[in-house]
Length: 112
Length: 114
Image (cartoon, rainbow over all chains, first blue to last red):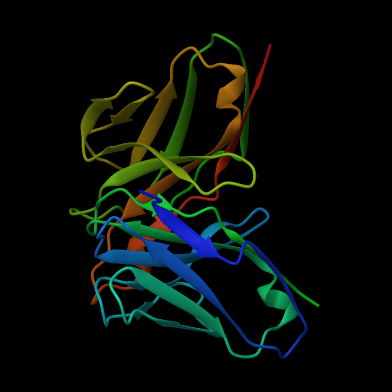
């Protein structure tokens, strides 16, 4: 099992460009999450999904959109990147609301 | 709104026991407490989870008092490889819940020296 994988590992964007981060899990988990991690801020929840076809906003959803068309994939989109979105993005999945979250290796995004 | 507070950093020597306390005064009845470990350039990794009293596994113990307003992660006999950031997570989510029901603490940097 690969667990949780994230694509790409690193990306540089110019302000205003768009991109999609892909998260895939092979553990048949219902729950999936997108977090961002900034120095001194810990992990902040961007969006999450409790099952295929569902999405919900987290703590910092502005500037991001998500889709969960397939159970195993959770996509995070940036429509118009801003320097404030420079961060490390982590995807996680879990079997249920209180179950352990399994994290991916992260995507480093730099917006110039 | 679930909010978690934990110390920014802790130093220890090899072989000592490290105890990290997380404060979560607004914990809800259905909330569980979970601790994660994170090494540089990696995603967080599950350590232990509990609801009340004491939980122990092969790497750590988790102590939760009766009022559940705090929890203490105990790492016995730490080694250099335990140098990492430790996060406390309180809460759970359903599609109808507010994001505030899932709160990571800001993390505690533990540095273990010889």
